[in-house]
Image 1 (cartoon, rainbow, N blue to C red):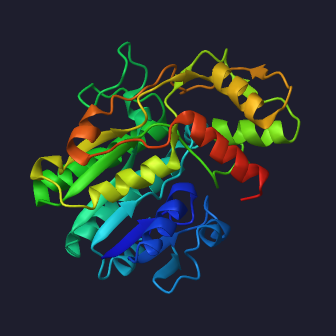
Image 2 (cartoon, rainbow, N blue to C red):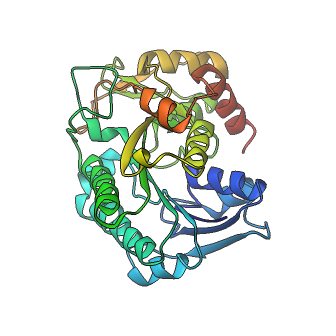
Length: 316
């Protein structure tokens, strides 16, 4: 099998690359390094592996998409410009990367007749709903340009299946976290940000009152979901969307308390103004993924947080 991982030098992409080369697959990784880092691929053990080829390029280029698609069987599309706050500040660039880049890649995949196209979607597509947990049959209500851009990619994947018969599948991730997730950006996700600050003896910064809830999903569970999509599947999964989470929610206040206990830091949180576009409550219904993909989140939050803190404390 020959895999293409877009966003390969990123947090999730590097975990996928490491797992696939370890399993004996041939892998092409592409990344424009705007968010990702070659260091991630080194840590994953992929960069120097004989079955891994890395290409620094940009999916906004049609030429790039056709170049990296040569001989590919499976596409795992994880390249994106993330972050709700960044999309609020600069919606045009978010759209160019997440929508145009995805469409370019889908068209190249169609023309090269790839076997399968797996798209990293986002639970932000749901927006604020009064009903929890969130199921795939709910109407979407994105609150931010980022959420709109990720939902557009989902819709393009469904359209390419229905129009051209491509075997596409979209995985709606719920707040993925784990080793190698950057805490350095002003747009950093909450868990790496909390851990980095606590390890430095600083107060974790909470936006809003901290009562908002999330379904945090360890990166190893996401890798397993991607690999499940590349096994033989019944035809009814193509063109569909699946929630990838753990099916449990926790408040940000409770998360901060847990991480303080794991790190051993006696530091009270700092509360700041809530951010526009943020969702209030989120938890996944994972029944469809369990039934159709055989998905089962093996790493739960308590273990995942310990693994993540250990990786940050050890410099990995």
